[in-house]
Length: 356
Image 1 (cartoon, rainbow, N blue to C red):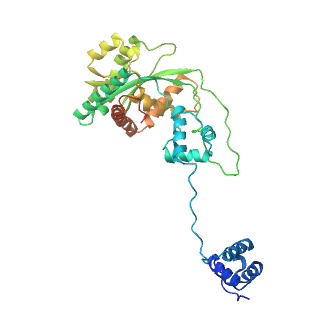
Image 2 (cartoon, helix red, strand yellow; image 1 turned 180 degrees about the horizontal axis):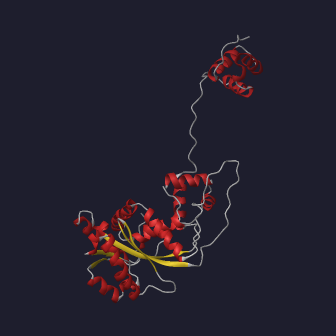
Image 3 (spheres, one colour; image 1 turned 45 degrees about the vertical axis):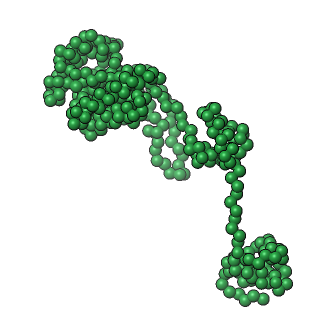
């Protein structure tokens, strides 16, 4: 009988199995003696029988043989080619459909898609309009002109611009699912919220601003629309006085940016801008991604005010005023710096829409 001693590794036990087998000890007796010696760390009887059988067949080594890697049957060159062909034929094809047609597992399809083909499935990006080549060329030309101007002004062109746009502000705009998230304990029930829609009531607001903040917020009177005459009246009787008060250094010659809305292009508007020394910064058609009010000001402001129920137009105006005061100057300055980066990216992508 083997003397009791410290726990043996499986390698040690295989040496003992071979020694006892050569002495004619049966597998059952070998396992019993190992159990007395190794306790809980003993090899099970099935493995003892397996090793005895291998030693009977002439094996002399007690070491584990290195495992041979499984052949890559699923990720063969032929299967990779078939998967790629299916994807190129139908960009929306599902992984399950590919697996069924190729005859491999869903996991193998995922591996081929990610590791071999370097592909991933993404959602389509919503864009304002399908741009023609002429539209793209106009966007590139505009961006190149602005970048050249900025370089000539030692990087101060974008921060010198006064920009504006109009937007609708609803009396109630429900918060997004992301905004409604809240912390909870693992054993507490998840919060609930009722599905609600934005209110039908809304108010149009025109905002004029620059890298230092909001210069003027104009609430369009209820029941009216923005016409050339009404817009010219706002420029003359509200924007000019606000510029002289808040931005006197810009009032003498205004670098002015607006989009191509009919009221902005009206003859009466254009005449006022010329007579009052406004230099209009060109804006390419269908380019909200290159208009700072569209890509930063309005989305940021509306996200902040989401979930609030305004009882009146005055309440909306007050909330916008408070948001304008509380938003740091650095945020407005960063938006103008982002405008330049967007122009640079627009040139790089040859006039296509840009996101950031």
